[in-house]
Length: 294
Image 1 (tube, rainbow, N blue to C red):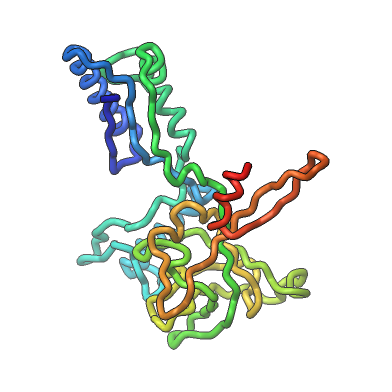
Image 2: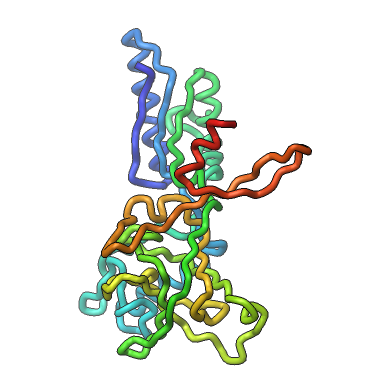
């Protein structure tokens, strides 16, 4: 017996403190029973902020809601509303999406938690309580450990127009190579243009586009939301999705209709004889061996 743990389906600081406060009472009861608890495991819920500005996230989600109510043109494929729907002019449901802007990402959430007062110990912060009672705090930080790590690259293999006149950019990847099938990845890719086009500026405004995958399925939209790339994508360009190391494909990647899963590449610094280092790479499945070899 080491102590107590809990898991919350909530990222609220208040909810987390209430759960910890309940565990503190259990610690006291355990001590009365002659036990010696020394560990408090508060689980996960440490988030990533994929966007720099809350305004961008609020503006896009508002546009989705207004489109669902019929108050503006759709900004998603076939006006997908991700769990929202209109009922007699009233918006109902819940936006089924990760919050892509987070006020308290990762370590900042933990810092605020440790500095917060425990409800049953007025004037005492969580950090002070843990230290005074020699209780080890265990965390399961999950995706936040990989915040800022990883990119997903896909080659543009075609462009075309849908039957409704929407511009489609076809990528050599599947939706499952990027995200959970029922979740939208609301972070737009950067377009790396091929060859000489890279240094040319567009003479006309860039048209908004949808990014589609390489499966023969109408549902294989890599992104179901409309995007406005800074450069107009063309065959041979690369679409670069940023900050995708954490969970982006790990729960959903498949070999559908013999289209292989995206290969993972690990980039690392290798030491040189003179004490300097250089960037090297290897396939991800070979990387653990490099770590063991030191």
